[in-house]
Length: 342
Image (tube, rainbow, N blue to C red; front, top):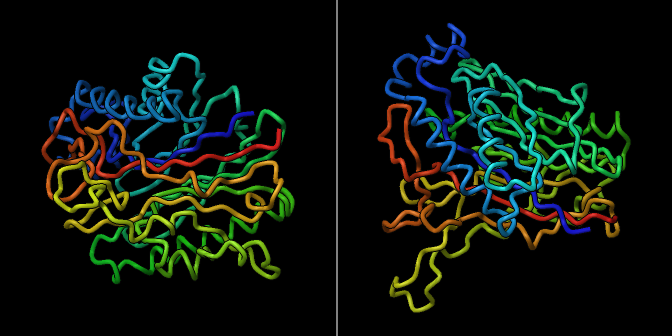
């Protein structure tokens, strides 16, 4: 069987139209004028732009499973899944979505090929990460593979660095503790051999304490394989840290820059979007085996990369920012392959 292609993308404020009947009064008040001018046509154009990238993944076959964040509701997720299906008609994409209580109304969700996975309604869980000014939630779905195996996945969108990285660090520490707790619960409930894949926009890098100390993730594979008293996770993004963001060895900038991060802030590359796996996806011969060498930042089509000094992603905009109808998101997607034993 061919390897499974798994991806993640922060799709940057994929909101429903300005006067959507699907939006609560509370959220309408919270958003204020942020969505002024966000027409159904702009929403649909953004969905089309996102779908064009997603459909090109996996050599034009589309991903087998995709996690996303910054989506407002199930309606826009269904619209996105439909748009991808139109471009990749061999797929039968379905949606697993969590209607969270985030202050801005942004949710996390999965799009998956129902020929390969099922997501039973009673195996979807929302884990609240509390903070004073709102909440973020971790979406856990215990997918069932076509072979009848449980594959637990946790989609994350951790509290932002708004107000300062250090000032907001405690919120991401709580998110890390929440993730580690529910990783442990998955193994208790579904058995110690259950494979677990964690993905998300963590708003911290792999070396930050929220991930290393609180989520118990590490760059050392052996630490994960041989742990006996804890349940660490192997962070697959470490090899991408510190990579050069230019493909031209002569340094004359004649070639397209290659992004060295998934998100850029003031020209600095940050690897905020990450994959983490537990030891049951590392053991040789495991039914679901992560391929660390396959992990990459998705930059196709080339129009996703900005043309300025730094290879920043081209955002679509909105939410009070200028709209570029040829843009996509302020984050790059990431992707990887998972080998199966069948």
